[in-house]
Length: 568
Image 1 (spheres, one colour):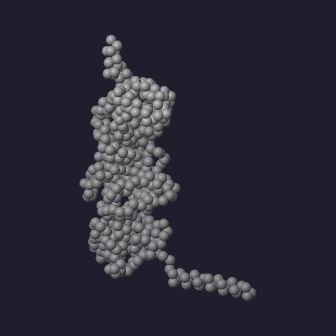
Image 2: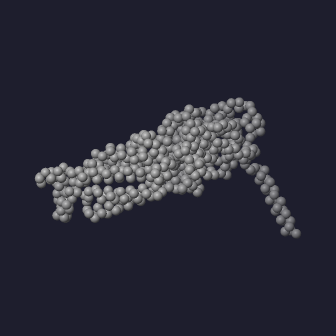
Image 3: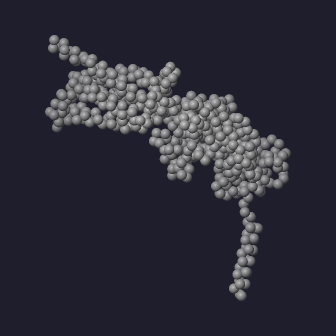
């Protein structure tokens, strides 16, 4: 009996303790809970002047019009404080913004404004489905998500659906309200691949609050490819920094300092955000499963007094990396932003500016040939002929030097045998031999070194230009993808074998035989994974080189003519 009394007493005490704890420590309101479950204490009431945060550079906060009248949502100023009850549920509203080149699908749900992007150009359509290429690879995820940096913002902000205030064929306006803070987002699709994204943050509370905005973008990785690399780009006021998926698998990459624009890209497509005012930095990361890359631009700290609002404006670029569009951003009248050159987003490879300079000239010529023929494969062959003609004097000099070296090669072998133990004497005798013959080993290498930057720039241009994307030629379905039937690599290997057999041999016989088989084999393996557009160029170039070798072999050198005259 005594045991039962103790159990009843213990149960009563537990109930009293639970009631007392809930009375003195009430649970947090919904506005105090972060989207990820982290709690942020909302600082209510009026703050002193000493607690005001530093104003952001650029546009200063504005007074809210009619702040003392009816507030959005039908709540009267001075009445019950909002945020004490959950936000009303909003039905899902999906909307499609379109222009001549692009369609953007948006909705009013939480986690990001954009759910899909579809290019409308025929070049970027999938032949099987007939739909535009899903280059963002979002899946069930979203991009362009506005938030506030936790720990540097005085109010709680969670992921909630928005109320759709208005929408047209090219614009949508949404409102999200939590507590004393209201956020109005307006996304407007403009010309080409450009869009305008405007955000207004309003303070309807009785006290000043500070905040720091965070705008997060997302791009899926899809099937991982060594050739189609995805990157996060952060263009600071000093330099462009890029990070691929491997750089952010285990940790975030943070770029601090003035930020002009930030982006996520693949080989041929770009999702870029240009803030209307300089941001304080960006953060590149990956999702938990390493299936997508994220890039968030971080704004500067802004303090809003009661009744004030802060307006943010962003320029958006969503689409193919068309160099002329990137260099002239923004081209739309609806974007009142300073002109900015985003051409740096095009990857020109190892030599950077040199490859861009040479490659841009060859790209203009390639486009001109395409305008004449209407076939990109034929334009590449015509470009090959022009490059070959420009470099012809150097290749002729190189070939003559190789023939002279071949003629004196027996004497070189004799000197090696005679002075094999005396390297100094052997080098002296060889230099004298080269002087008498009027040639040197370097004379054959120098023309090749001069041509090397041209080849690299041409390789970078053919690998980066979006004009060739989804363009077919003969049996090749896409000039930016490898040959699916391996005909080009095998054909190039055969031509290279013939070329090494025809060229004069200036070295050891065993080394020459190894090179005859190794070089074509290595080239075949390389070309299995490179764009077929580059393969068309190399195939045409080797064919022209074979023709040149065939002709030059039948043209006697000056030494041959002298020997023939003395013999007569």
